[in-house]
Length: 338
Image 1 (spheres, rainbow, N blue to C red):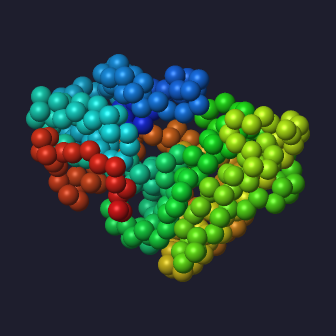
Image 2: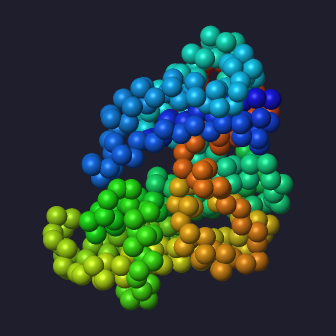
């Protein structure tokens, strides 16, 4: 079965053609990073405008690269949750129009669920598995009993891990997106220099909290009781140590909770998804501290939002649930396990 996947949840416009949920024939991604960089983050209205401009050219290119036509497509899959409402509507309406015009079946896909699927596309996975979502908008641990079968274990109570990286980078005067900049700067730093710690959540020890960690960095970089607009008072060498220490604190907290959750839930594997999984230091930390279980990481091209993960998971969603009538497919801000 050839599945056309459409992704437009935030600041990437992407279309992909995937065969039988595992063979990627094309995966075209148009990124908006340069557009949003000058604003230090995603501007929803600008993101939506660019999705409108890009979605048809990206769709055409994905079919061309896959060497297929719309007539060859068997199923249309589209990310319909969660994300920016306006951005979601653009992708979903494009998918609806294609389904109505061609008579092809249509299926909605939750793109957070798809981030986890990206790591195991074409793999035989031992279940139950611990799913670890680490992205700009989400930080969650879920038990996966199979594709489409989830039980949430924990989530962030404030900032998502990717959001925390972006905010810390902004405090340090680094460009957007902050994650890669923090990772690069941390290579020059001493991770033991500053004793940063992620927060603890009372009565929910596996939940995540990065707000206090972010504030600790702010006060270290700009002084006690400083604000976002206060001047930086540390040296470039100190900034590298701050980056390394922040990264160590954040990822150590994640690794500790991943290890505990996997043991408590008798998991046989760990599946990771989301843009933060592209961080090499994170991969090193988890490999060292979770040696007893196999770790499944997405390929670099599948860490950020992309149409291939939507098409791949869409294949399984169609087999599990069937298609959706175009006029009934709605957008949502809910995670797959909410």
